[in-house]
Image 1: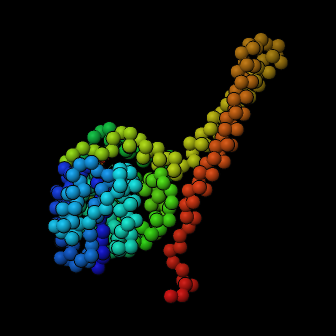
Image 2: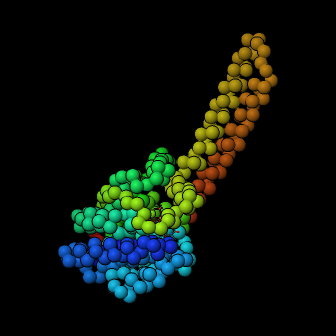
Image 3: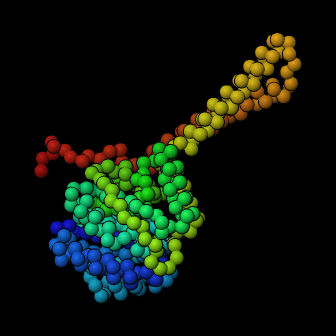
Length: 316
Ligand code: UDP
Ligand code: MG
């Protein structure tokens, strides 16, 4: 039997919390009756420094029903931090966690499929949105474009998977070894490895209240995703340098050939050719410095180099 913890970051979610709690209670009670989860299973709401009645509601839910627990951050630290705080706090209390949004966009009915996949031996289960028709055109277009951009940048992410996922206690303990502070969990988790799979579920509309992810927060997360996992933007400088070098050499060569055959070459050709060569040298230097800075950046993150899944030689 699995001790299952659900972890839900909440920021100003007073409008949805009572309904979210009611629906999760139904699912958890059902799983309990079927003996699929243990009595110690819990739903943990992480209050990310809300300014409304979110925390009093969580306290009330906790008093009424021991299924519900709460964790309160001292101030708003953003969704990724709140989620990580919840996951790392409960990592040794459970066999597995499922993280989901508090606004019921991640269907509570998907919990059954997550648990099936866990019972089948998967330690990480990614929830993938099967259809985004409930999202606005803008959100869908930008989100799907972003996954493609990440892919082009060589960042390993699961397409259309956000932060709704199951992780075993072991996977959480490995995640805890990542010390970086700019969090992009959907890029970090695939780095862990272990047996994993995906399940799909339809993404619902937010039950009530407004999105807590304004464009500015979305852009920051998007930027973090690229800069934390990809060195490709740096390599662009090298490409510019090569292009400029080639253009400069070509111009000078053409000028040279024409003048060798006695033709007239505008001084602008020499000017632009020479300038391109000079600027390409500057670009090359910038790229070289960028490479070292990029490598320093990677080193200071002190990411774990590897994890051992099994060791047949280990004595118990
Ligand atoms: N959230 C949070 N801290 C924040 C912003 C959001 O904990 O600073 C939570 C929020 O309460 C919700 C989840 O993160 O449970 C996803 O946010 P939201 O639904 O507003 O984002 P959207 O679905 O609109 O992208
Ligand atoms: Mg939402």
